[in-house]
Image 1 (cartoon, one colour):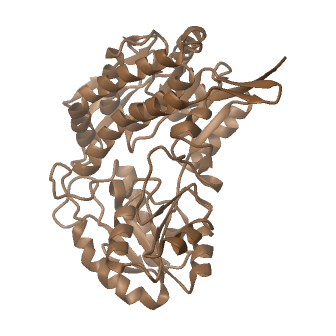
Image 2 (cartoon, helix red, strand yellow; image 1 turned 180 degrees about the vertical axis):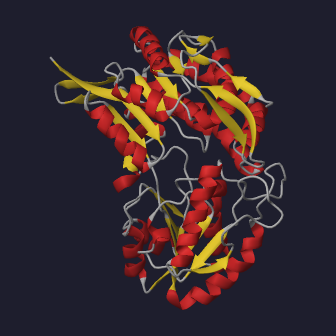
Image 3 (cartoon, one colour; image 1 turned 90 degrees about the vertical axis):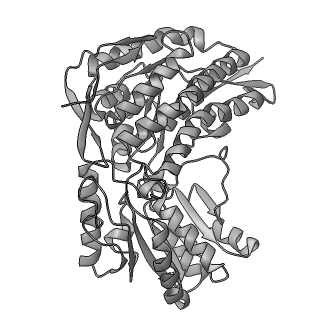
Length: 472
C-alpha cells in the first residue's frame, strides 16, 4: 500500500508520536483507493493535550488585545502561505469540486482576518449601573471538527477561541488527516507559545469523549451531526461545560410566486448541491407554488446539466464524490427510500453516474411529488438529493418550512424585498438568505435540533467568554 502514514499529533508545541497505536485508512473518494494511513490518538494523548493547554492558560488568558491580534496575524500569514497545499490535500482526500475547494482554502485564511476585525472593536468590559461587567476567557476549550471543510473549521474555531483568551485542544476528523497535517504544520510555523493550541487526531468515541468528559475542559465547540451533538451534551453535563453546537439541517428554499423563476431555480439548485450536498446548510427542500410546479420542474430539469458529476480535478465538475463508501451507501439508501415512498424521480436516481464506476459518486437527484412527511423530506441525507414540495400560499409555505426538527438555514427567492423580508421573519432558522445574499460576520447556528449557540463574529467570540460583574 502506498501513500503517507501520518504518525504525529501536535501537543505542547511539538509533533509527537501518539500513545495510541491503532491505524486508520485514508481514501481518495474519487477512486475509492487507499492513499495512506493515520495513527489514531487515544485517551492518554487527549489527557496530555489537555494538560498542555491547562499549563498555557494562565499566561495566554491575560494577553492583551494587541498580543492576540499579532498571534492571529502570524497564523493567517502561515496558512495563507500553504493555500495551494490545502487545495491539493483537500482535492486528494475529500474530492470537493475546484470552486468549492478554493472557497474552503480561502475561508481558512479569512477566518483569521475576520476574527482580527472582530477583536479590534470588541469591548471586553461594560458598565451596568455601579457594576463593571468583565468578559473573561472561559478556560481550556475543546474544539471538535468535521470532515466536510477541514481546514476552515480548524482555523475558524481556533481563531475565535484564541481571540477570547482560551487555550485549546482540537480533535479533527480522522478522515481528514492529510489536510490536518498540512494545516498543523503551517500553524506551528506561526511560533505561538507552547500549549496554546494542541491538535489530536483520533476517533470521536475515544478522543472526542475524553475531551467532552474532562474536568479541565471548560467549553466544547462542536460541528457535526445532531446525534453526536446530543451525545456531547450528555457527556459535558457532568462538569457543566459551556457547549456550542452547530449541527444538522434540512434547509428550505422557498421560491415565491413573484420570483424570477430562472434565477430562483438556479439559486435553489446551487444551494442544494453546495459542497456536493455534503453541507449542513444545503437547501434540500425546494418549496414552490403549486400553480408553478410544472414550470419550475421544466427549468430545473434543464438546469441539472449545469451540475455535472465527475473528477474533482476537472474544472467543469460541479459535484464531486461522497467522502466515503459508507456515505455513498447512506445516500443511495435515501434515494431508494424516496422511490419506495412514492416520490417521482425527475432527474438522477440510484446507482453511480454513467462512466463513473470507480469512487463514491452519486447521481444528482431531484425528486418531485414529495410531501413533507416523507423520509427524504424529514431526515438529513448529506448528499446531492433534493425534494420539490408544493405549497398553496405564503402561510402554507412558512408552515411547511418550519415543519422540521431542524432550523439551521433557510433561503427565500422573491422580487419583492418587503415580502421576502416578511417571510424571512417568520422562519425558524438561524440564518435566512434572501436571493442568495450573505454576510460572513453574521452569527451562524441553529434553532431547534440544529444546535446551541452561535459562531462567527462577536457572537462566536462571546461563546468562549464568561461574565464577571465587579461592584464597588
